[in-house]
Image 1 (tube, rainbow, N blue to C red):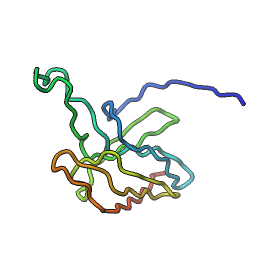
Image 2 (cartoon, one colour; image 1 turned 90 degrees about the vertical axis):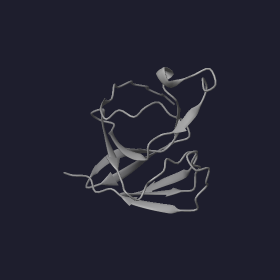
Image 3 (cartoon, rainbow, N blue to C red; image 1 turned 60 degrees about the horizontal axis):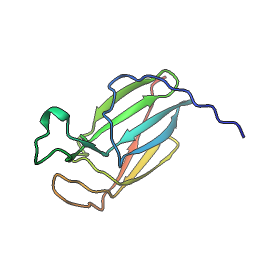
Image 4 (cartoon, rainbow, N blue to C red; image 1 turned 90 degrees about the horizontal axis):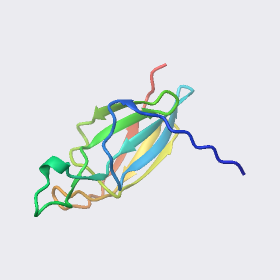
Length: 123
């Protein structure tokens, strides 16, 4: 078994560093893209205080499409996704991603919603 790791800088709408997110690959019209959603991140260092030096916030509920071949990232806002969700589960099947569960710090809920997002990639 041989592994080959390559690093590529992202351009465009680069997502902030995060954890508790998902990254799936969808296939549409002969193309593939990564879909990044959710997660948490540490608050920016310029907003940290002595009391909140190690605090985290939910990432904004944006859906990022990442082109692995060219290193381009684009974010999208979907009105159905109002809160950031961390530690959810997701799975992709062809051109559709399914997102279930998770936790929102903003309102301390664990919604039982199942989101189905179909991604139609342009030619």
